[in-house]
Length: 260
Image 1 (cartoon, rainbow, N blue to C red):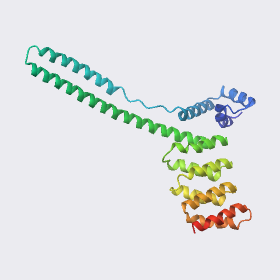
Image 2: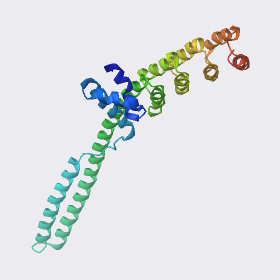
Image 3: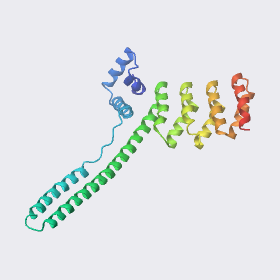
Image 4: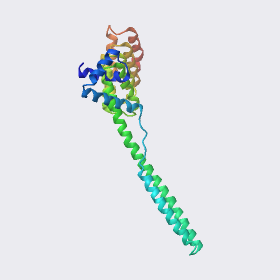
């Protein structure tokens, strides 16, 4: 079995979708191929990142500093109490009160610093997590398995504001994927980002090339909801084509007046 064939089967291997013969061949190949083993490990790490995203923990440095200051303040307070027997009682009490106030202020400052440090660490972890998610999503959308490509498309839910690389990858799935279920999933995913110029242009292009009636209707409804004037010409073209299904033509005739 060739190396590139192994890489195409890695996702199904990890999910346990291979039959007995394929499983034996893959495991035999992995014993002697460093490249495929590296690919296997990378895929395992990426998929695990989605299932077990870690919770960020703040640094222990602020906590350690606070307890050190607390101990020093306790020692200073003990000295103040000893002076109480030698000096004025009121003066001693004022010193104790000042010590307590200083301790409270130190605690508040330490807690604030700890929170600030925690926020910085959480932000750094979230940025790293987004990079991992984007890499995994793009990788899955290029997988040989249609089910894995659909899984990759559906990971768009992890991105509140996906960048152009993600949007373009989804558009490619909608326009060029040979599996209609993958294309339909990409249409539905892109329907959440219709403000994007890339998405608008991709929908117009898909309307001119898509042959599956169910996907055509989904695209038509999306373009009508967007009030996209550029969709008028390709819709009219579909009306004139003999291969366009009657129920698709009926849908166009019903919806087209809404954007003319």
